[in-house]
Image (cartoon, rainbow, N blue to C red; front, side, top):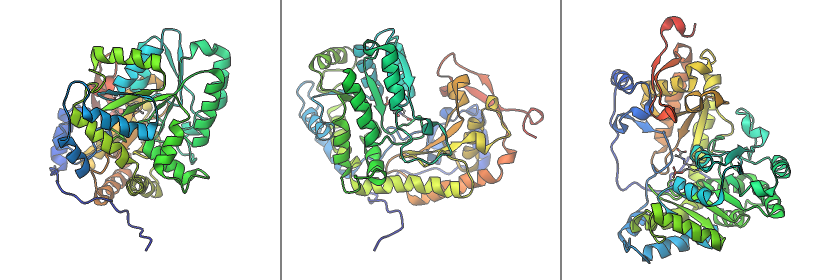
Length: 457
Ligand code: F0G
């Protein structure tokens, strides 16, 4: 039988209760949180889609491995298992553990970049951009134009613009470009994948100019599954083989194991370059820890070693991608504007199209995220004018799905909540700031709804 039901390929052994709240309670809670969902206590959230990072459920195999953790300061057996697991997929010579992805970024760019340098990427994630800029270098996004049009359907909207990369190298010269990065999947651009063909072309350009290519590999397994589904010639290849082929095109990677590492904390940095690896390990010792633990406990290394392999299991990926697509397709069928097609780890609502009566200056993404909470206790995250101020090109609301945490009935509930909000969208009011920090304001901002008079008509 070819079952159509989306089937979670796991049974549940331990459950975490969810506390129901009433709409009246949520109105009070939201007011107390100054209409900023980051400021809500997580216990007051029914379905938490703030992030897919570190929020996944570990398997019985991972928990069993946790008990095998070797907490030795140096030469830990758990590090050997971690390194073997990472190398079986990524294939790079040096594997440097870090406490999460951004620590790997800080060390990589700290070693490779200096003022005046330029780092191209399909799209830098915000911590990646910040860590590039912290070294005085400039972070440049070279996404293909399809990737910037929310409603446009295209199988690989995460692809880098290879001609633009070539032009940039010609214009600046190889010396000013210490590395090129490819983010798989492209989180800031809607969780969209990069094709093998695109990675190959980027790799060819990099090799021709002698520039190292690094992957921001956070969601590499989801990217591999999209290649299997969508790219000619890959239907019969395993996700692991696809991942191996992709990483062989590069010289190293940064990774947040909080995503496709299926762990609650952790990350790593890989490189094939002996000299760089030495410098990176020196920096690691300074701020993260000894190179055989890098700021992690032995048990974390064990959980990641197992989790990386589980993330590549076809049954898991089939369910994961189908479940996210189910959410996106069901709301889109009712007219809800989303970034098309649905991404791997998240569905992104287009808040400007959802709430055309709210101008960007009144934060339509925040207004929509607040209404999803009021309606159904759902926590999402605004990626738009509150986060990026004038630089925001879109106002999106990201519904990021934690791995192996919610069931299909939770997804059906989400569809219900979103459609209810869609049906009364005319009544949603814009927001105004009452407090903002000088940088990264979205984490701590205070807002309130604009008064009826100043609001929509
Ligand atoms: N790169 C990408 C593409 C990411 O999505 C993230 C984190 C990082 C790097 C940094 O990794 O959090 O382990 O330091 N993304 C999370 C999110 C925070 O919600 O999208 P980290």
